[in-house]
Image 1 (cartoon, helix red, strand yellow):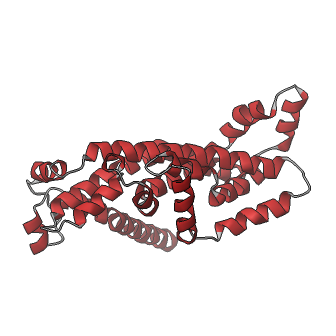
Image 2 (cartoon, rainbow, N blue to C red):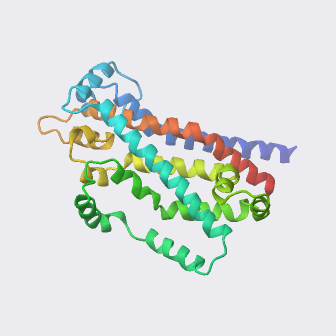
Length: 280
């Protein structure tokens, strides 16, 4: 009886801790949503409030009344983030496939080189990258922000580590014996097996690309090419008055697609975790 009571107490404590951590995680997003409905004066007087106000439409009017178009920024960010995510996930999986399935002489040195590239910060090569893009007339072009995502060392590493225990080499060999081409085998057999890893990296890549401010701010100088993070940063730097309500409204519009992408792909992550638990 005492043992059952102690187990119940432990479960209650675990539930309380989990609920507390969940509330702690949700709180910043809730405060952001609430501040999007408050005026600048209300935010300046009381920075934190848990109750919405009635200035949502006014903040939206201020946001759309600026010299740039938030809808255009939303579309630009979506094009860049979707393209970068597709390139990074597909080609990183393809590179990991070459590192795992094929047995070639320079396989390990090539993987070591990829890991060495991973250690180089983006800011270090940004000047050379901008000069290169300027010389080939790729500034103010979305492809300058999409195509470099093909080389994603962190994604390659993750895909390789997931593929080593999850991809049966016998299936690949059987497909080859049956006359399947390498790209057909990769697209029809390997990619479905890699769905949990692809979903995970798609979320990370999309969020990283969507929130990226540094490179778009350097490469995109035309106003009609601005992304949402650039527009939000310009809101914060208003020389007359910073409209905090409009800033929070812009942040809210920036975050909403990230929630959509996560909820769209989270089922594949959960399925992958459950599959790993069954295998274990």
